[in-house]
Length: 311
Image 1 (cartoon, one colour):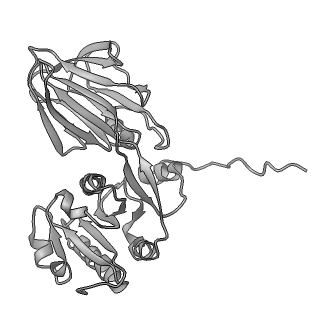
Image 2: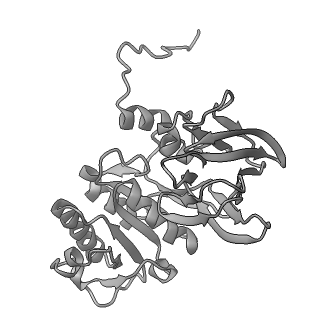
């Protein structure tokens, strides 16, 4: 790889390294960017061997998962599935740079394009032929029984308040805008953004929300009560989940990998995030088309609106 670049541009490459084909795709992306005079750095995975032994990736500057990894780059390029994207978004948001996902996984709902279009996507990045849109996040504050703050975090998809004792349930009270809504025993409660509505919240029975919508989605998970339907509340609301003082210990998990322990009597407060995730878009495909494609929804027989022009 080149030692210096004339453009001064630099990109953080975040590959999923679980398959040989993924390593090859990451090497291909690095070579294309380097050939255009764009410097590439790579995020080190937990298993460093695939990167350290790769003839192309081993030559790149390697960074651990920290703010420094994305500091000063033009964008974060993700090659993998949704889990890889969420970890990369954590880095991109921390330094306010955009993130672009190329799906090398299964569903890859968060990715902008698929792996077979990698070369074209890289060319679009080289030419700066992309736009950036903001995606809503949520901010999370955890308080103990004495109302002292014991943890803070954020999520692009959701925060999952989870029971840790599988022999019992989490006894919780749901609150919106400082008023109680319902209490129930449950496996947990999911509080999601529109982006996260197609992830864990969807699997738990929540509705799909279009990402252009600003809202907070609340989905009780396997709750034992009469009123346990999902709620869609204002993005300006504060949603809180309290566990009973005699409840089992629980956990608040943000985007599946940032946990905060919840001792009995804890309170999880969720508001709209102060900082969005900057999301790279390469085309004008609608969310409807993405939904149909990713979930392989049947649309046979659709005739469309037809020609509505009148003379």
